[in-house]
Length: 208
Image (cartoon, rainbow, N blue to C red; front, side, top):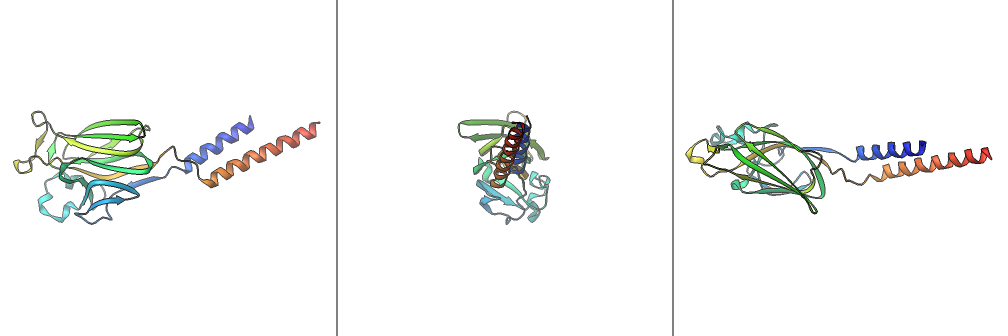
């Protein structure tokens, strides 16, 4: 029983040490820069923007979408965007804001091997904090916006019609919970099991 307890404790410890949270705020990027690699991830169709850099963004969701000054990331031309990791990641949360439309639909699709997850939210010009449950251990996240202009999706002015951009800031990810324990933790686990085995053998020898 004690051996099983030790195994459980060491295994739990190894898992807790292998999960490291990362906050992605895009603030070290140059405004206007389309980036393909950032914070250890691969990105497609994403651009960094400092909304304070031009008065043209003053009344848009880019400004209200800033959570940690100064940059946000946006989907270029309002087209679908994605983020990928060869090692996988646990999608935790993020702040998402529509740039020009109230009632903009944002679809998330997460994939990992043959597993596919989906989530849909409705955006406005005020930031929406979106959380993802523990199932979102994925390799790729796809993000795409749609707008039903016959329903509740309306632009802030006629000049921005068709601009289905969203702003993203403070994306939080963790290492995938399927991450293999680090070598040091494996050594600790092995050493603990060996010690328990020796103790049991000595007790058995003493009893005989």
